[in-house]
Image 1 (cartoon, rainbow, N blue to C red):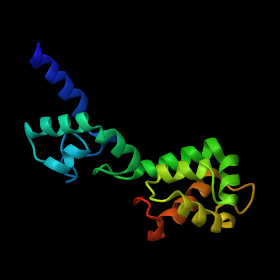
Image 2 (image 1 turned 60 degrees about the vertical axis):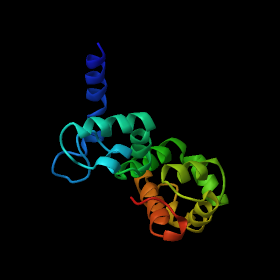
Image 3 (image 1 turned 90 degrees about the horizontal axis):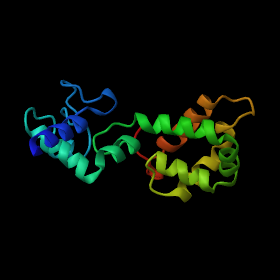
Image 4 (image 1 turned 90 degrees about the vertical axis):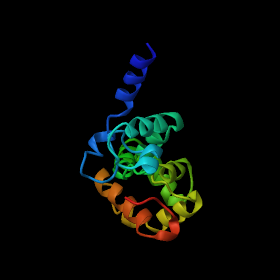
Length: 160
């Protein structure tokens, strides 16, 4: 019974996240991204069971996928930012114009930035670029926010 449970757990956690980590990419093995990929890399074989177990025990795969850390790539920052803009555009515009607020805090987390106050300052300074008119598309707002946050290393945001 224990062996069957172990096989089921490994099967659940061995699927690469979002189709990444396919053999040959050099990023990680079949266990996917997370702490396990940092510790064991893309070594093939039974070591991927240890990598998957490590990812599962420490929860680093889920966090890594969301934040773009732990060898998981950063596509989720753009997706997360776009989804946030679509659902919170009015509050976001108000908070960016003030340079502070809950929307700024959310963007800080989504983009793995170090300091919410600095994020607020940078976005407030770029308000006219981010929201040049009421007709600007959500995609344009998203791109302008990402450009503002990730082009200035002093903001301390993760890489897109």
